[in-house]
Image (cartoon, rainbow, N blue to C red; front, side, top):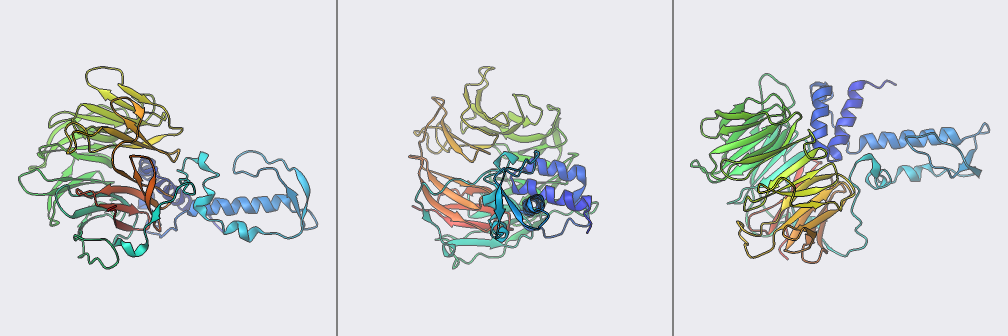
Length: 459
């Protein structure tokens, strides 16, 4: 039996992806060169690293607790991956039941290991929600690796997905209820191939532009450091080559003439969407740029792992009016900022672990629902989603529905009005991202088992 460093690196890389640490996964893959390994195309089952650790721990536990006569002694002291084990022997075990332990689901086991950084499943026993059966879900299959990201076109029935198989795909979702009977035509496949590289072309980010003069355009960013602009029919309009590392974020400005990108190379670049020329490259940060967002056609914000607030800032989002900027960080806080003052307007400190994403509600000034309260949602590794009143700075439920996905394989639809869980769907893989269509009647979710699911959520 032999274990190679390439095998270990591949398992660690997959664990980081499965746990939602996408930025760490890309950095680790770059430093370990895992994507250039001969094992890069190996089909590794979900949860493999945890499975091997669990079995190794069980073997070590048995080895420690079997005496010279081959009888297992009964010990009630905890046996963990870290720390020295001191036995507290209470007797002997006549019949071993190790097979039962091995059958325990991997992702239920992670509840007890939550300190390891992975998000724990939400407790669903306390709520009663209508479960969405498989026959009411449209499954979009074709990707050959994890689907990291998905996004609906703001104006039509087009859904874009980006995957670790070096492709993005554009799916045309027909009107009507979702389900197995829904006929979806084959997707348009956007292949991200670079003749100088054999791998490392995971599609990491994408964004739609529907305001330009050339019709709907899709921008994609990938792990090879290239940004690409495509037409909705799959024609490659431009390849944008200046970054020296993976691209983590892409955003069109409001007029659709400029594209903003942020990269691991610590820079942000503004591109002319029509010519593909670099308008300006900004070197604001001393560490990888994780997220970018436009305030207006000419003003934008960036965030990085350089701890410019108190810890690594994972995401930033301007509100619909471009007045308030929200940020979330590894310091367990979400903050709301205004350009009118240096200190944050609100500092939300109720999460118990790192906050990895935030989202503004489509309400308030500058939105299609100007008379409704502006709400900020934050999601954390404490397995909690919190909703904040942006005016009063308190946790305040107000609005319609919120969709969330997790690596517990569940897609949940929540009532923002009272915080109740109203719909739930359990898939066959962890969920990287969820997104609503423009009409608010369908939700798409991308899964680690290479599929995209579309669910009809009309109440």
